[in-house]
Length: 177
Image (cartoon, rainbow, N blue to C red; front, top):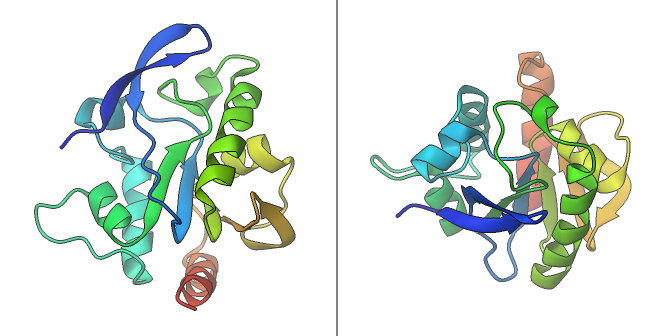
């Protein structure tokens, strides 16, 4: 099943990915915006950097991907939601237009309040910055909530393995409570 849809974005119709927001999700995974390769495939995080997210979530035991199964389907089955701050796909976040992050952040806050996740996992600091302002550090951000949920920022794609492992251990420990 493909999650590719046509949606209204800032007065234009764009081809994008549908929000995958189960009722009362364990966590919602939030990216900056979908990559064209993901929209083409009809599934979240299909680009090279996106695949790193799936590897990390699998490595820490939060998502188990069966052979032939799409990663986003496995994530939803495990209680995770998926969405983006900006719904317009671009090759890089640098190609976003002024105002898109703010526009998307306002819409996303409403969606998160409606589903009430236990946690919000940002795949990149750029997404977290758009939603809650400048973020320092990675992992769980102490004292910060969004829509009543704890906030976790994934380590960057080129972060040193020990820091990644430490952050993923903390993520799994808190979500498995």
